[in-house]
Amino acid sequence: MNAMAKVEQITIPSDKRVICVSDIHGNLDLFKRLLDKVNFSDEDILVVLGDFYSKGKQNIETFKFVIDLCQKPDSNVYAVRGNCDFIESYMDDSEKEWIENLPHIIETQDYIFVHAGLTSNKLDKLNEQEAQTCMKNDAFMEQGLSFDKYIVTGHWPTVNYCHRIPCCNPIVDEKNYIISIDGGMSIKADGQLNAFIIFNDTFSFDFVDNLPVYRAEKAQSARGGELNITWNDRFIEPVEKEDEFGIYRHIQSGMTLSLPNSVVWTDYDGRLCDGTFGTDYYVQVDVGDVISVIKKFGNKIFAKKGGVMGWVEI
Image (cartoon, rainbow, N blue to C red; front, side, top):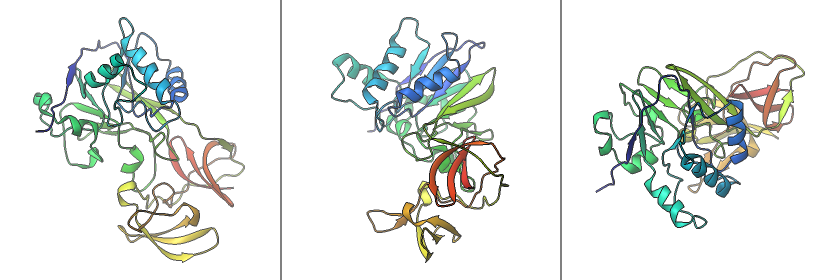
């Protein structure tokens, strides 16, 4: 029988700002920058939605920083367990026990916080949710579930839900009451660390990333936006190869687009794939705009502006 989820119920005063961060993945410097950027203080509530270490360069430091935040007297920081939050050799016995006892779900009066998603929409029986599903539940927003209380999740980078224009910003599904906030840090080349902020039942967000920046020297209008290749539908086939770029057909949609040959890769089954640069979208840019550079190719760059990715001609 699958293990059932651990549920922690807390009450948050209505005048408190709730800051949600997910999938830090060992990026402590970025996490600290993000907390500074949103002016996190003892007057706020911070909820860390799992996967706070692994995959990054500061895993030990990030783990110890988060555990210290959660264990300080009168702590205003809460955490749920993610699929990457497992026991590591550098942890002492008390730290291992802390990991093992982390809840999979935190429930408040109006919100439910979970790393990856829920097994069902039976919110009156949260302790019957499967622990493993709470920690690993790919593409949760596309499973057809609907709720009467907002479910705030991480785990699945939000760009994987964007089938036309790629974007790493949080997504709020107002119809089905699901919020997804994972910006794909340390998972995607274009990743960012998001802070999703709840205050007086209004939503806002901010983010940080590690990308270099470029100041645009010429303007371009937005165009394209018919296709963005996401992780679950990443398979392509060549149509015409040129020197740096080639024409590839996206197998699932049948659409063709231009891709740098250097970013196309082959999986273990010999299938050609792209999961980051496969979009026909060109970002709107004005002269002087500061944009983040994901990768430069000849006379254009794959860039990010305001969390939205696309091509910029230079």
